[in-house]
Length: 121
Image 1: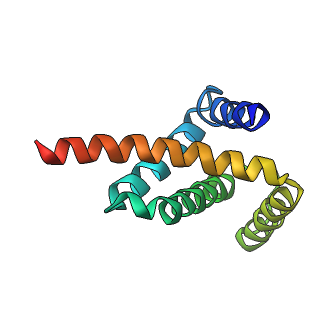
Image 2: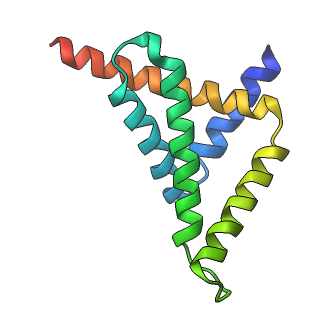
């Protein structure tokens, strides 16, 4: 159990506290969208999956539109990004996926709680 908590803390630190502002904006934006779309707390699993998909899509867009030293065509860059992303996903350990899921879930629940508290008042 302690190892899983350490993994979640490490994922939170790696995702949100690295100093990479663009990655931070992508992560917080995906969490914020999921929290705002969530209507009740029973939707937490599906909203967490949505946030992770948005986070992955944001990372893809960042890589696609970011600077590239080679003069590859846009189609080749998109295919290259998809292949690299898929390879990264396949090499990721199940514990890391669960840690990302739990980290995003906690942040969504915190924002949903804040949203719910503000809507009551």
